[in-house]
Amino acid sequence: MNQPLKPELFSFDVQPYAQSVHVKKAAKIMTTGEKVEQLYYLVSGQAKIVMFHENGKRSVVDFLQSGSFIGEIELLQNTCPTKDVIAMRDCQLIALPLAILRDQLLNDPLFLRALCLQLSHKALKRAEENAENGSSSFRSRLARFILTMSENGIYQVAHTDAADYLHVSYRHFLYVFHDFLEQGLLQKEGKSYYLASPEQISQWAHPQ
Image (cartoon, rainbow, N blue to C red; front, side):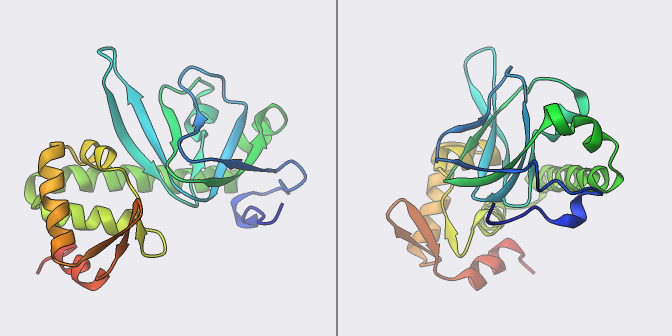
């Protein structure tokens, strides 16, 4: 493995069991209903969590970035996933086999603390986003989203996914997003967008 897991995440040495996994863009990391055999740690790249409804529609419920565990809920609850986890760009992950490590992980105080911190951060982030939906302009919300989802100054989230996650119509999303382009805040590079003026985007994200 080229990049080991942070030792402070565990009370025991997981390196002998860890495997490096590369997942290409648009491929599934986890699939609804399939038994979770491995706990993943996202080293680089981005992934989205997608829920499929009975009426055939789908919802993007969250995004995962480097430093996130994947499969931790299924580990804690010993259940199959109820959502798909899909790579948004090429992802590099570290996989830990649960058949060997399940009991050790569930009894490791450092690992459980790391999970609690990650889960509490997710819950707080979602609560803040829900509160902002009714009190912030969509322009501000979009600016914050772009800053959060950018890596190395590059934003690559599909418009449909972003509009779904931010709970706005696709048409309204495009209207505001194109305004960012016209103002020179973003510059299109192939299928990605370069943050040409991150300072100004930050001003929109956190208006005085």
